[in-house]
View 1 (cartoon, helix red, strand yellow):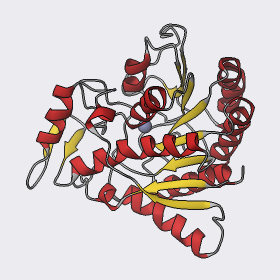
View 2 (cartoon, protein in one colour):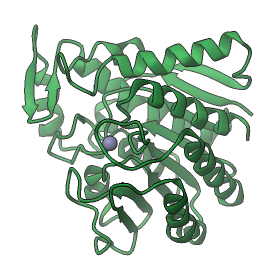
View 3 (cartoon, protein in one colour):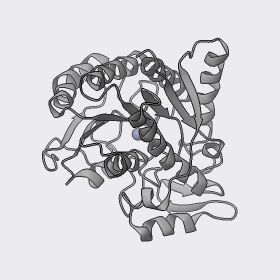
Length: 312
Ligand SMILES: [Zn+2]
């Protein structure tokens, strides 16, 4: 069984401007490292796919029609357009966002059809801060949520767990699924930190698990929390598909936050999630890139994650 790796050149056209951490270089760093590994013959079982654009129907399961229109119309013909204090569009941003949302939809279809065991979507902009009617935190469309909604609506998947190990809380994903018992959203994140949501008391309809962690939390403590409060809850839910909001900014080298994870932690959690996916979901895992702003740590962490996925 193969692991699909979705990407598209449009991911490097979206440019939030000089000095912005969510830069085109993020995708170049990941793909350059993966291509180097590929040439060494070290990525056996990984099959490259071009990310398609999400359709209006797919986008409008997570966002209002008015919001989708506004984002697509906001792309400037030249220069930059700021649509939130942190979120900026440039020429090419709309296509990048459409393919960022289209990749998880295609990935979900492929793993449900049995064409691949699992998939990693290496595109930008990220998505987990995007709310139904609000772009924020570098995010335009909520890619992982759009993929999950595709699985529910088109593929008859009954239950989905989304684990978000990005260092920031996925307020957008939580907002989209807070009253959707078929989707379980679980997040470990630094707190206090942007965006300020994700307190333990935020439990939705019993489908949200938030574990805020203090600055300085390292591998051992984080793994203990994942083992105690995340993995058993997924196991109990018995999802038919596991999705991952794979942000690598909880890495100790990341400049935007102060958790202290390492590449090995991402490989570990990926293997743990795959064990649960084998038990409940015929091995199906669809992972979607979120943050990660130290280019070396990002690329190495994404490689560790992809290697764990393909070694299933
Ligand atoms: Zn983040």
